[in-house]
Amino acid sequence: MEKSAEFYSLEKGILSLKDQIDALDETDDIDKKDRIAALRREIEKEWAKIVPALSTVNIVQIARHPKRPYTLDYIAFLFQDFMEMHGDRRFADDPAIVAGLAFYKGRTVAVIGHQKGRTTRARIDRNFGQANPEGYRKALRIMQTAEKYGFPVVTFIDTPGAYPGIGAEERGQAEAIANNLKVISRLKTPVVNVVIGEGGSGGGLGIGFGDQMLMLEHAFYSVISPEGCAAIVWKDQNAVDQAAENLGIRASILLGFGIIDKIIPEPPGGAHIDPEQTFKNVDRHLYQALKHLEGKPVEALLEERYNKLRKLGVFEER
Image (cartoon, rainbow, N blue to C red):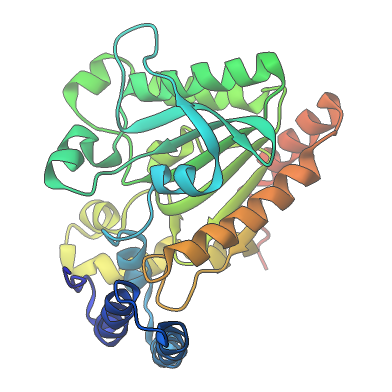
């Protein structure tokens, strides 16, 4: 069994306990259930010591953890009979965004999300979760299909940002994202967004607007990455820590500003330590969000969405 790779220094002790749990899972030990429960309690104790020391940069590292569940992992656990749809009907299919229809709790929904890769080959194929314009246009095509048939839309956000390449700019990257925002703002069906990892810049915003914004506890959502902010504002990569703090990208801060609507708790150590529990937490909050929106008249849905958008960025000077 391959041991977990250390991604940030504070998690070293937790990873050791996690490896013991994984080893026990592969045995036929009759006492393994109790032993695994005891190891999980040890993880809780270790995590309780770490939490007070977590900086915003550590939160960014957790959100980017290569073992963290990705969109296809959530789809496999939460949805049934996912039928992926490809292409934007203009240029090409974009593997950085997966989109299609599936069953959730007995009803059809549209599911859309950024997808990174586990292996080097998959990361390259998925462009590290950085979508091109055709990805956002594909997402919008699926959303409009959902609107036509009255299906709710669920999006999973996890990207460093929209792809900044020359080809993407030539094919209208900014226009594709802006058009998504315009159309989604008047989409006549419920839209629930879930930030599961990185919510980077316009890349996250392109599928990250709707009626309810849910966010995992150790994910982040930001206008720019801390590294990009440090390079532009300070022109110094040593300022990444300061940039991360100043950007206010933590879920608790975003909730206070009304940018997100609910924080989904993660298991001790983060989503990558216990993916199954993470899926269950997301499932519970996603179901509640959809149930809250279900049955609302379209006029009320659009009015509330409009008011939510207009409140963003409002502040008072004292």
